[in-house]
Structure formats: C-alpha cells, structure tokens
Length: 475
Ligand code: ARG
Image (cartoon, rainbow, N blue to C red; front, side):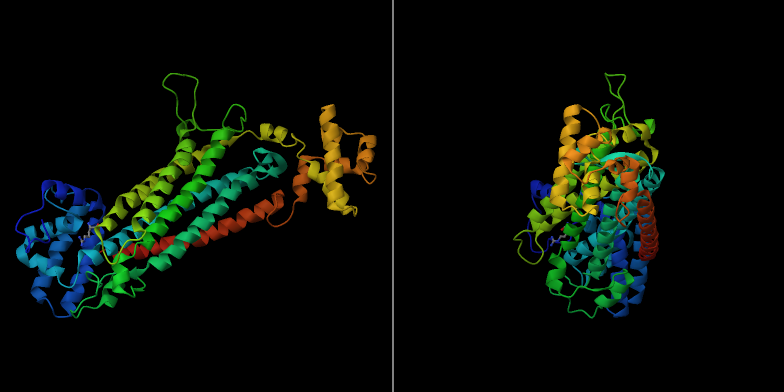
C-alpha cells in the first residue's frame, strides 16, 4: 500500500517501483517497527491528539499484527513498497482508515532509523553472546595446552619457543577488545531518533523523551536533522563486524596451516571438517577457510556503506536505503560463522609431541645465549653478535645449539661457559619468561584467569542488556 500519492496523477512505473522497493529485505525490521509504532501511539494518546477509543483499537490491532508477523502469518505482498507500508496495509486491513492515524507526527525517515537501531542492538547483543562462546572455547583450549610447547613465529619462521596455551589465548584477547567495542557502541547508539519527523521535529505535542524511554534508549537524539541522516551506528557496527571477521580470519588461517600434513599439529574433529567429492582420503578445514574467506565480505560491506555515506547531502536521501542489505548480510553471516568456529576450536586435538619436537628447530633458543651474556654485564649488541656466531657454527656443523662444545662457546665470547647449556632447553626458556604477559605457563594461567573473569563480567552485562531488550520487545 502506498504511503503517498496525493499530488501525483499517475502511479510510479513498474520499473521505478521495482527499483525503489525494499520490503524483500527490510521485512526483517517488522517486529521493531511495530514496537516503535506502539511507543509512538502511546504519546499520541497521552498528548490527547487521538481519541482514546481509536488508540485502543489501533493498539490491539498492532498487537495482533505483531503476533502474526512473529508467527509468519502476516507477510508482505507484491504491492508493498517497504516494511512500513506493508505494516500499514496490515493495520488498515484490520481496522480500516483509523489505522493510518498513527502516522501523525512521524515520518518514515525517523521511523526507519529507529527500527534499524533496534534491529542492530538486538543483533549486536546476539553477536556479543556468540563471541563470548567462542572466547570460552579458546580459553578452555588454552588451559588444556598451557604446558604444551611449540615454536612461536615471526615472518612465519621459527622465532622463540612458547607455551601453546599462550598462542591460543592471544585470540581471546583480541575478542575481548571486540566485545568492548560492542559495549562502547551500545552507549553511543542509545539515542532515539523518534520524534525527529521528516527532518525538523514535530509541531505536535508529542514527547520524544517518552518514546525514547519506552524503547529503552538512554536519551533523545540531539538534532533532528542529524538524527534522520545519521548512519554512524551502522558504519560502526559494520566496522566491529569487519574487525571480528578479521580476527576470525586469522584464527582460520592458523587452523588451516596447522592442519596441513607439513605441520600436522591440529587434528580436526570429523564433525567440523569436510570431504572431497573426488579424493576419498581428504579431510578439509572448510570451517577455518570460511572464517578466513568471510572477512572479505565483511570488509566489503563496511567499505560499501562508507562509500554510500560519503558526501551525502542532509537530511534523508533515498541513498540511505542502501545501508540495509550490507548490514543484514554482515550480521547474518557473522552469526552463521561463529557457532561452527567455536565448535571446531573446542573439538580440535593438537599433537603435543610434534609441536614439542619443532620448538627448538631453527635455533629458537639463540636469544637465551644473548640474554645469558647480558646478565653477565655484556652489552646486548655484543651478546647478539656472539649468539649469532653460535648459530653460524651450529648451522655449519648441522647440530643444535646445546650440542656446541666449550671451545665453540668460548670462541663466540669469553664469557660464554658451559652453564649456558642448561638454558638451551625449550622448557627452561619458556619457564623463564615470567613477565605478566609472557609465555611462562605460570604467567599464561594468570592471563587466562583474567580473561575469564572479564568474560564473566561481559556475560553479565550482555545478559542484562538482552533482558532489557526483551522487555522493550514485549508488548
Ligand atoms: N525504505 C526506506 C529506507 O529504507 C524508508 C524511508 C523512506 N523515506 C522516504 N522519504 N522515502 O530508507
């Protein structure tokens, strides 16, 4: 049903209708649209603008419509332009022309951005919940492998030995930052655009403060022109999703490489891997690969929206309708990806023996020699040089650093004596790195405990916000 037309003598051409139609994707906003309509109806009623009897009739029709939408019984039809017009059709089909009284003091411009904010708050909370599960899977694995030893890498070359739990826990830290981004975003997003009208506010005695409160927003948007034009919260959400996606892509890359025959570190559970249609022996890390691949679309959607917003005149322009598909795509794909990724992580077995064997290879203990000399008062430049000499000799002789003779050590540096050899052991090297952020298992256990206690606090926050939001969505 059209929400305009009085000044036109013709309806839009079919091609124009097809171009501007959005109901095929913005139908996702239907429940939020109805809830915000009811909040708007409340202020129309309390301001005395609409007769109480009409308000009661509209409220009960909207409530029925809400249940029908939720139950899939009311659906958009081919004649509906967008979610707002489809729902108005639903309303007037139930109670006739009185239903359209609800449009007083409101425009689709403030309505659509209010709906979108509610949709996003709802979905960002679900994303936070799912990220917390992923974080928990990572922390449990970190704890399981805190005393497993592996080579750590820089430039994809063996660098220094590390606790494998430390290696896994680092992902929980980047996810912790993502979760804090979501909570910061919530604070900034919690302003209500309703009452901004088309762009200039409303001359009717409706109180935006009341609708804001009813919809669970912390405050009313400050400037009606900004409020109907602002899509910062969409861009920021797309950034947060892209950032989470980027973090997941790095997890995906590690799992893919660790499960190669060359590495042979990770063994994926059958339920979280896939086969090949032609090669019967294959077991592929598709979940990890999709985690890596989906980052592409998340970044694309963010870039797409920023490009739509760049240089856009104020206030509402139809360009803004282009915010939705990119947003829905990112939200839905991230929600699709997180659970199997958590499952894959939780069910992976790592080969401790293989990782332990690889840990000293590539002279990963050379830094121990340099640090030993520094402790003896040698400058780091000189110590670095001496350790480099040791590597050179070991390499030429095709042996490990701990196999060097007393003479080899002495010729690298006079201060290098046999007691350095006991340091050339991966367990010892790791246990020595006891800084609070270091790789000593003792330190890693404390890091994991801290991440866990933060994740408990975040879970409490998310659960409270979800409860609050359920309240907003309850009629
Ligand atoms: N479908 C539109 C959108 O998503 C709703 C707002 C339409 N407003 C307008 N002035 N035409 O942006």
